[in-house]
Length: 142
Length: 185
Image (cartoon, rainbow over all chains, first blue to last red; front, side, top):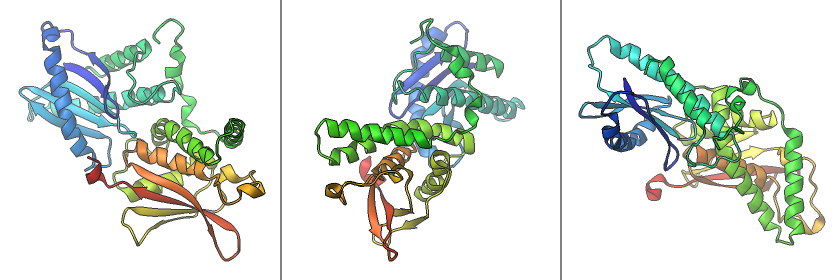
């Protein structure tokens, strides 16, 4: 259901992964990246208006929606998926799942950051991190 | 990275939630820092700069960790709030005590003063006579504060100065000056 997930550090994209296995996703990859990056402006605006970390849906474009989470040090976690209708009963459940997913990935990110050899904004190459993120995504049904 | 030598266990760490006291580590770091800089024959003001910048680099990592342990899912969005978080929660994690007081300067809206009686890095340091007054070892802490503020997206400059009060003991004051956001963009 979710299409793509990205982690953006202070200034640069640090990690991204495709979550959906549907056909045609590969063609759309650059569109997904574009939508997520353009959502960053909204994230910057929204993060100063609330003291929580979970920012819910921050941006919509055509039929895509972007959820965001801001970590304590300003790193942003972005999740892109197809729009879910407002009035459908699934909306509330999906929000909870996305929030749980973000919390777990935030934990993973903190552990990556504790590595003294990892510098701010360095791309995350770790396969273990990648595997963990994907298993979180499956666990939360994304 | 990513080869078979990578340890997957580091992502399994669960005990990270309980803090440990790192007093001795601070002393060791400070001692080695001073030794290195003096052996290189550099000016003492560079010790100031070096300790400042070393901690500044490390602190963005610690900020994530401290927030995860103490206050999950809440961030600070105002300067006063982040300073209160640093002086109480972060200081407790590093040094097991809190700073004496936090004040706002009347001269300048973006300036804050943090008073501290006995900063831990300066515990075992007594300055040789010729360096008296020229080097403040609490700049270690100033770098710590600056790093935490920077990581939390509040760029600021932090200086440590001595302030002599009536009892003739010196209190250390950290002068925190936030950069104006609108001019930075």
